[in-house]
Structures are given as structure tokens and as C-alpha cells.
Length: 540
Image (cartoon, rainbow, N blue to C red; front, top):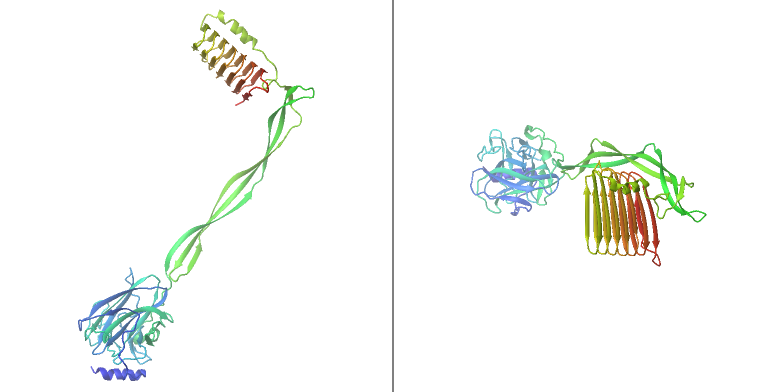
């Protein structure tokens, strides 16, 4: 091989003068170098590189072999995780003469180090015509279907490169087979491996590397040697997708409906004659109800992010749902004419004064005459600090009579009946101070009557009547510092008559149930400035 004559021939064709050129180092920007020591042996080399941006990038090789030659082939570029070769004519099968006077592989650009076109520059050899041996490794080098690039550049570097569509953040692996006549020596026997951005697009790529000049772009070598046209550069690929819901609401109103109800209002006042009266008014309440329909529309919106940094949005099929609520407003027209007027008894309650029911009084009076299914208890106690407890249950009629004279006594009466019990009556008469009286009457049937009289100071009375049957309580207390608690509840009438004299009185009366409640309270307060409040609660 006459290396010098061949080099001058190429130099003459390119219009460059090589004599006198000074030896050059490998231009900067390389991602690796080939430090091959074995001679005439094809070895596989691989280099990785991550694209910083999306767009047209390139990979390339720069050769220098002052005393001999390099031979390369079986070039491959794959994205990480893929086995697809992104290079066109990677096995250098196609090539030939170009308009620039080169013997170049199809779809590959040819470059050289700026300002110095080397002697013995590289050239393409068709399949099986290379003179530096062959290998079947990878795509093969110098086989029946694969060509080779043989380069003996002297004093400076030249080589080949190819553009491709890169995606930012993707790591690429560039590999090839090479063999040399001489072992690596920096800088006279080297191969530099390059990757970076293109100017001018994938096919018309000019590497954006100031250390090289392009003799021919990949587009200028397309079709050489009958090479098929390369596929168009791949467009941007999908990096990620995300879907969110776009929600909108609208409101409409239906036809309103109006209803009228009536409610009773009680007013306690004084008439023109100066008498206390209770008046009942019937007020009219008008309620307007309007249905409110809320329609919610949900549209899925899919956002796609592409490898070139752009985004697109697609709207899916919307779905709708409707909920109904009701908007209510009411107004009250207050009556000015009472529907009823009656005397005001103390603190409310019955509009008609009443005494103890005569039939109940008669029953109590005749209780002693009963001889069957009756429980009768008579206790007369004189003295202080005594505990008296009476518990009656389960018989037809229960009657308890307790008379106590003394102080500091605790009196407890418990009368319990059932559906067959006709009456529960108790009579308690206490004269003394610091006494406590507790009367409880419960049964699922029959009437309940309690008569309690307590005289003197610092006494307390607790009276409870519950369950079915009528309830009647007649309580009288005199003296100072007294406490009275009366509870009547159940599904029948409740009547309570309370007479209080003296000062510092606390009275709580609670009546509840499904039937009418009556009470009458007479209270003579002997305290200057007024006595403690009286609390009355009626109704469920």
C-alpha cells in the first residue's frame, strides 16, 4: 500500500495542501477514546452518553494513525433499554463516490479537523474489499454484506458521523468494532468518540463542535451505492400522561309549593279591669318550599408531555349528575284577636280553680272499709331523727297514712302497682323542722293521689307520680326555707294544687304527658323584697 501517494491524490481532489501542516491533538468535546494495543484484531468498544436536550444530535468518530491505518465497522446506536439500532447503514454495506470526490458510506457525514485536511484520509471499502481482515461480530466488518471504513490520517484527525433524533434525559449507547495496524499512542495513533448537538437537522447535520469541519453531510451521501432512502426522523415520543377532572356546576329552580299551618300562642296579660288573664291566639304560618336542582358536569382532561418538551390536552366524554335540595322560607301572620280568654291562675295552668276531686277524696275516706286485695299502712311517729320507709306494690289498692311530729326525720313512701291496680293513695302529715319527705307513686294502671302537709322550717318535699292513670297531688307547706319538687308524667291527666306560706321558698313543678295538665299555686311570701322564683314546666 503506497500511503503517501494515495493521500496526496485525495488532498488534490479536495483542494487542500497538506505539506507543512503541523501535527494536531485530538479536538475537545469527545466522550471517550480508543486505546487499542492489539494489532490487526477487531475489538468491540462501547460508550454511553445522556442527551441533555431533545432534538437533532450526532455521534461520530475521529481517526489518526500516522504510521499505519485503522479499520472500523459494525456501528450501532441504541437507547437505554432498547435493542433498536438508530443508525442508518450501520454495517457500512452501502457507499461510493460523492459529488465532493469522496468514497463515503451512505447516510454518513465526513468531517476533518479544522484547518488541516490530513494525508491518508479515510475512505469507504465495499463489502469484502477491505484489506485489514474481517470480523463477523455484531453487524460484521468487511464481510459479504458489510463494508468498512479504513483511515490512516496523518498529523491530524478526520472521520465519519451521523445525526439522529435524541430525547432529553435518555442515555444512548454507541458501539463499533475497530482494528489497527499499530498500537495506541497519544496523539499519533488514536480514535476519538464524539456525541453532541447538530446544526441543520438530522439529515443535514453539521456537528456543533468548533474543532471539525464537515466535508459532506449525511444528506449528501444518501443513496450512494444504491442505498435505500433512510426513514424520516422520528417525532417526539410520549414522556408521561396525567388525567385530571374538570368540574363545573349549574343550578336551576323548580316550581315552589306553599303550605299553611296554624300554631297556638299563649299571652299572659292584664285586662282593663286590672284582672290577670291568659289569652290564646291562633297564628298562621305560611311555608314556601322551592326545589333546587344542582347539575354537576365532570370532564376528564388528559395532559400528554412529549419528549420535545411540548404538551397536549384531550378532553374525554363528560358525565353529569343531578342532586335535588329544597330551599324553605316561612312567614308568620300573628293573630290580633284571641281565640280564648280566661283568668290567669298564679303562674299558669288550669283556667278554672279546682279542689281535690270529690270521688278521690271519698275513696280515700272509705279506704279503711276495704278488706280484700288492699295494702294499708298506718304509722304515727313522735320524735327526732327517725327513718320511716313504706314500700307497697302488687295489690289492688295501696294506702299509706303517716303522721310524724319531730325534727330531722326522713320519710320515704314507695307505691308501685300494675295494670290491675285501681288506686295508690298516700297521706303524709309532718310537723317539725329539718324533715325530708319523699313520695313516689308508679303503676301501669289506676289513679295516683298524694296529700302532703308539712309545717315549720327547713323542710323539703319531693313528690313523683309517673306512668298511666290519673295523677293528683295536693301539697301544703308553711314556715321558712322550704323546698318543693313535684314531677307528674304519664299518658293521663295531671293535677297539682300547692299552697305555700312563709319566706325563702323554692318550688319546681313539672307536668308532662299526652293529656291535659292542671295546676293551682297559692303562695303568700313573707320576705321583704320578694321570694325565690317558682319554676313551672308543662308539656312534652
